[in-house]
Image (cartoon, rainbow, N blue to C red):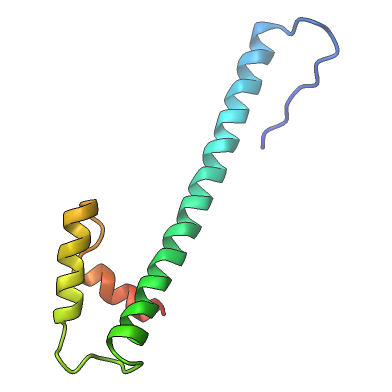
Length: 96
């Protein structure tokens, strides 16, 4: 985080207030992005694990082809919008 000027007086000048506020918001946004990326990675790992272990019985591929991925992609896209294409779920499976 950028350096925040300590306040030893009751009233800080407007420039210091603005710079401290900007620094705080940038820091918080950076933390948020990092947390979101970690959560997305864990979610995709778990989706991949579920596909491989539960639907494919631990095999590299299910006997019935990619229908599991296509069906799951359709359901997730209907519920959550973009971000859950068949390619994304195949990559999630690879991550696992």
